Amino acid sequence: MKLTFAGTGSAFCMAADNFQSNMVLETTPSGDEQSQRLLIDCGSDARHSLRNLGYMPNDFDAVYVSHLHSDHIGGLEWMALANYFVFDGHRTKLFAAHELLDPLWEHCLRGGLETSDHGNSQLSSYFDVVPLFAENGFDWKGLHMDVVPVAHIVTDENTMFSYGLFGHGKKQSFFLTTDAIFNPDAHMPLYRKADVIFQDCELGPRHSGVHAHYNELVTLPDEIKAKMWLYHYQAYDKPDAVADGFCGFIQPGQSFDLG
Image 1 (spheres, rainbow, N blue to C red):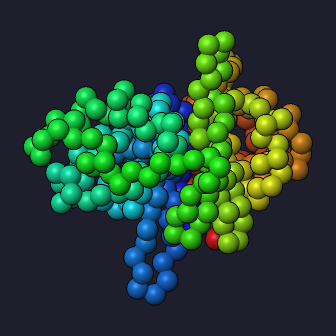
Image 2: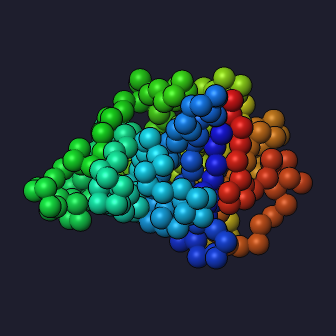
């Protein structure tokens, strides 16, 4: 099992050599088995980042949606229509927290996907929809993943959650934060339990308050930083993360063997 970062940039990344932070989880084939791939988030520039890795929409068995910002779901219309019209109706599973499914369709996808040549459609017309519940997690190709609600945007009126993943691999476990505020009290049990951590990390002079900023992450205990990789960064000059105790900044196209 390996995890490849199609891009490592923030939502507004404009770097010519980087894309939004979407990932490909791929089974390691044995014998004549065909590789199976789970796309973790499908952002607005997914058609470019996936093509850069040599993948087409029909190369995926499933897609996981962490939350409803466009750098995580903006490519789903493209994937749905490309699979339907270009790739002979290829269907992928769509894994998402059950709380996200209605707004994903009603507020994000319905306008472009409802009216089609086969009549009025719904989300299940294009994807095999699998609602997820945090207390159960889900299994994919022998890998169990816990679904972890993490606070992303916190206001007086509401909290927007992103749904991170804690994967239980054969060789090692991993915590993928997706998009999360700096919340060490809530995340520390997962940090300590994971063998490797993939942490979204904001750079630059402005702290948005919706992602963990590098200046906050650098205050974490040394034993946590020693297994933490950083991604979802802006195109600013990067500090020396290794010198500060981290594993480093993930590069676009970088892969990790998860067993």
